[in-house]
Image (cartoon, rainbow, N blue to C red; front, side, top):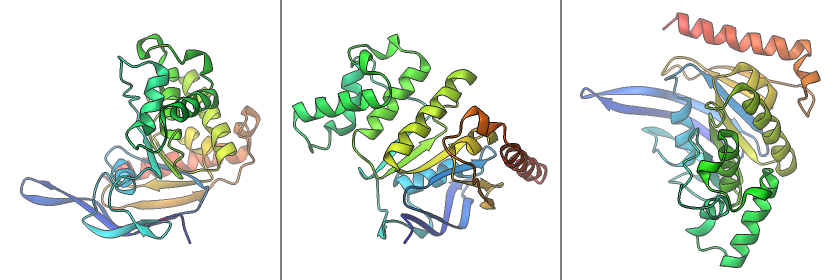
Length: 256
């Protein structure tokens, strides 16, 4: 059984008194522990799909299940990491991470503190527990954002272009850091990006989406060795996959 199953899902929004379909009859299975990346042009429905899996939206038709259970709303088993870290400026780094489980009433204060410190260690920020968001770089804020998502021990990590606002060097560094965390935890990850190179670097499998409501136009197995070091990025297979993704997106854009 797939960990996540998207079964003939359609999603329409009301615009000018008519239904505009962003997704139509889309089906997709994601395996337990798989790192799946979704790539597509702006407006293709990839963020809508992520929000449907997160339970932040309800599909117009079709069904989404996680471990065989229907998704009817948000839940602690699915954590979302958005492009904007959205840290609370009046709370320290440690207190921002604690917020990830504070509202759930699952742990006592001491255990929350211990877990928050452990996850700051995981993302490489153990020395910044008492710092405030304005004292951090963009990459550091996203590390805090990731720690806040991980503290709840979700089975599924949903990431919507989390590194898009970072400079190239920091973005690459965060990609390697995410690879390390995923290799240790083997969580199921769905990652959205516009970058073909980032998709190939991170993923087990890449889904390419066309213009709405076309849905999936390609399903690509990466098949490159891990960890994806600079040496792996220099392999012919890496360049071939990256080029194939760019060509698919170019053709999809030309048909719009």
